[in-house]
Length: 105
Image (cartoon, rainbow, N blue to C red; front, side):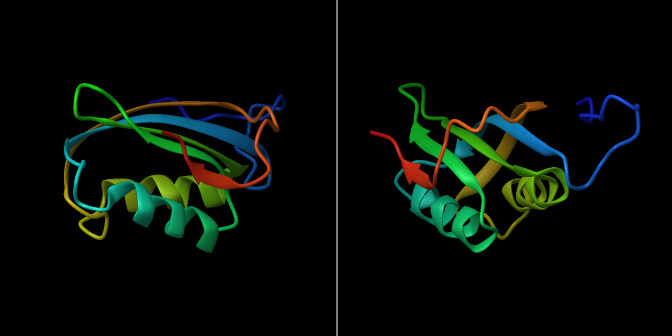
């Protein structure tokens, strides 16, 4: 996974970034989406989380790079509910499309 870097080439902890992730494992019917909302709100991040038909969960989160990286670490940690087996992810510049963090149905 490539880190997002500012135009100067150096990572900037305050740069707003977007993390788009597909979380695989035992992540449906275990409260994963609601705990994800709770963690995102705790970190003051914006975005969405939703179940995919294939049993994975889609997460899109935006905020300061350092905080988004903290959220990404939580997604991969044993603290996340259920059992995360794999996280496919991509970092890109934030779009500002979200005003809060919510579950999408």
